[in-house]
Image (tube, rainbow, N blue to C red; front, side):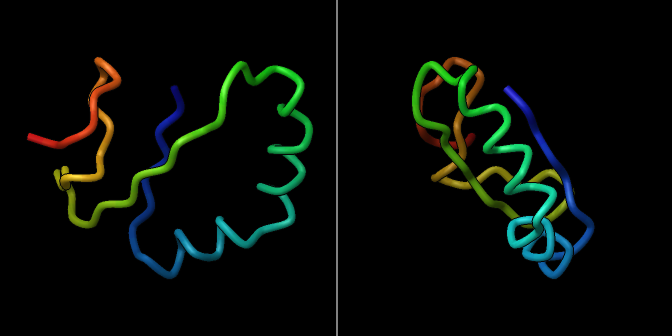
Length: 61
């Protein structure tokens, strides 16, 4: 699992739209066993209902 943290929604969106990210996703595609999941939350300790817990179950805390 990889967790990226961004200081603002603007920085998150810049990363999501970046050529660097697209290149890394394409490069790593051969190593993925299943589809990747993404959850977005806001705030320093935010965990929302769409977050994925370490045990793989949906739902924050």
